[in-house]
Length: 127
Image 1 (cartoon, rainbow, N blue to C red):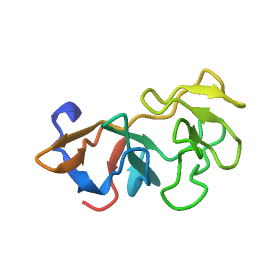
Image 2: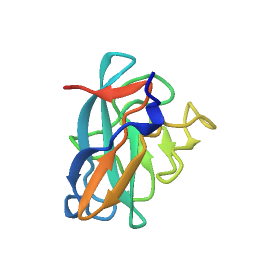
Image 3: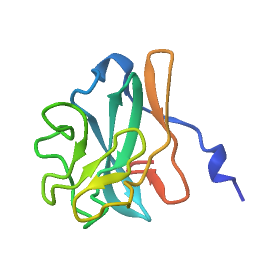
Image 4: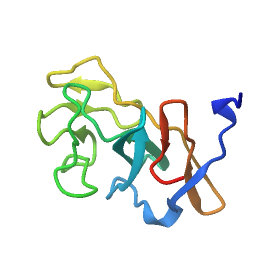
């Protein structure tokens, strides 16, 4: 049986598509075989990626397509529940799910491209 950690990375977007604390790149995937969405954004120079689901209730969080950060670009916010998440760790620091975390998606940036790594629970939407 193949080791999920050996999964090949899949391209998400060009590195220059992610502006520091700007719009996120949103993408389709499967979580446990069910359709879901993920997002990647640039924070403090690094791409960070999470499943687009609030830790309180699994609802998509962006208040407009690709908009996850507050007006100051400091927190990832859930547009429905008001939960605030620390962008580099996904830790909820305010709101109804304080202490819980967003589900992280492993990403890597190299050669002008951002890639994500499928896992046992997160797979590409299209093979």
